[in-house]
Image (tube, rainbow, N blue to C red; front, side, top):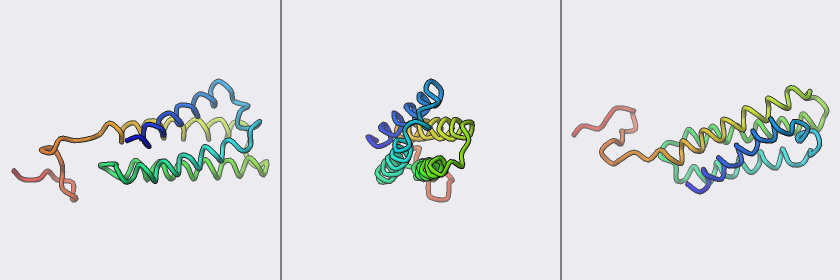
Length: 121
């Protein structure tokens, strides 16, 4: 749960810098890959406590996307518009998915079986 809450804050911070400081990704070439690696590590940590594992898997992929975007930026292959949307959307998705995973704790009676159907009573 702590990892998901930290990932939520990191995702919100990514959205903040994408919208209010769009030159951030261009000016700080080392902060974007660092944010991507932190998202990756927090997603791996969160996976151990998540009820459903797909949210942390999606956040892992989004962390990889941020690292790849940073590499493209470092090679001067990513225009400013791509950098904006490439930081904005992963930031929003990481925040929403991590918060969802942190808050989603079904009651024992509402737990579903592995196949997706409700357990018989």
